Image (cartoon, rainbow, N blue to C red; front, top):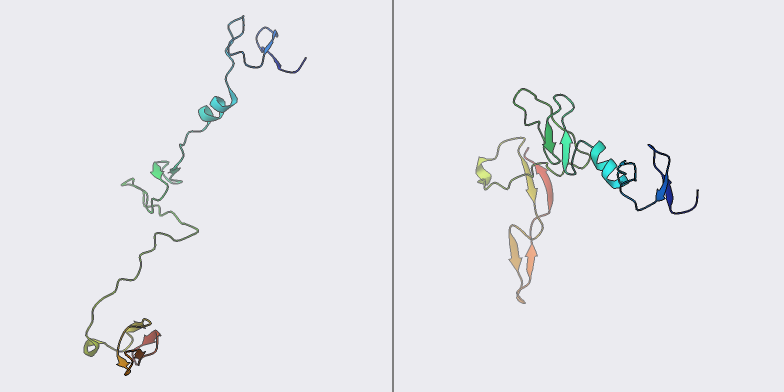
Length: 127
């Protein structure tokens, strides 16, 4: 068989590569279309392993009411970040955690107007 030819599986007739339908009536399916037909899921959708419900890619818990499956992620992009809370320092108790951020807190101003911070940055636990 020469280049640019394919064989019809029904009549074994040689036809051109770009032929969509053979003389006998057989329809050739493009490879791209065959791949799409065999995949059940679309891009951006995942399937719950317990119940089989289709979910969005970023779903943390299964949306099915009867299923309690939680999806795990390699990069925990969905983790909740710590919220900053305004707390009076007099209300702190033993074991509370404090985070001191750079350039925040008490400072001393020099004659030139430069701020010199008086605290150290870092994470602290109240004793």
